[in-house]
Length: 317
Image (cartoon, rainbow, N blue to C red; front, side):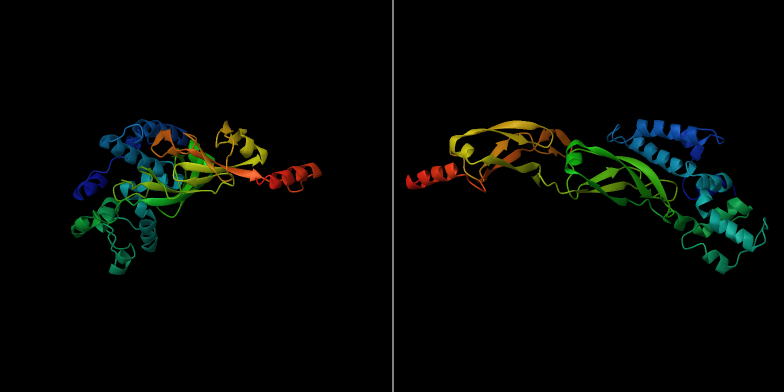
């Protein structure tokens, strides 16, 4: 039974991975990488929202790149086709039988070593030319479903406000790891989950689950965050709250001037509209920045200052 016939018996036809990327089987690593980037950009879900066809192609392209960009996986794929994931088991059993091909006989113990749910008919029908065991077909379709993967990512408050990119090492399908550049949108907060479509674990047939970036935001010594609003302390000399005046407030990305009216109280809040965090998914909308007045008292008052305070006390102020 041929590889494609075996796949058809299971209810699908496995596409050639080189065909998916549109490259020749002798393509160089650079050509494969270039083809992947071009197709990934073209069919990325962010570029084609709610387009199921593009999302499906995007997952296929990622699955193909995961195999062909890895020299060892590519070697196995070139030799065993869509059964490449079982290459180690097949080669081990070939060695155990002295490298014999043709109608190789395997004991129940040998077959059990491959694990539950593996389509033995598909594997050995394609590799050794036997008819295979047709009783495994329905079981194989549910052998392994595409799986989502969570990846923890820590960002600074400034990165959460402006958005950022990260180059991550993410878990592969076989305990290995691969490099992936991800984009983190503005407005993320602790516990935000950012979906990277088609970057999770592959299921049978090459379809992949999604990768979810689980965000944590580092504490910032200057700002306290409450939802999309920020709070910061503004230190002012004693005379300014009493007499009024102008003070500079350092926001997250710029400085602004704040006028304090006479009689401002210690701890009083002043709202600076639109200078807070962007709203996740709506970066054009922002929360507010609240400046809390923190009055600075002289630690070692001069004699003149003491006299002035004495006069204030005597006046009953």
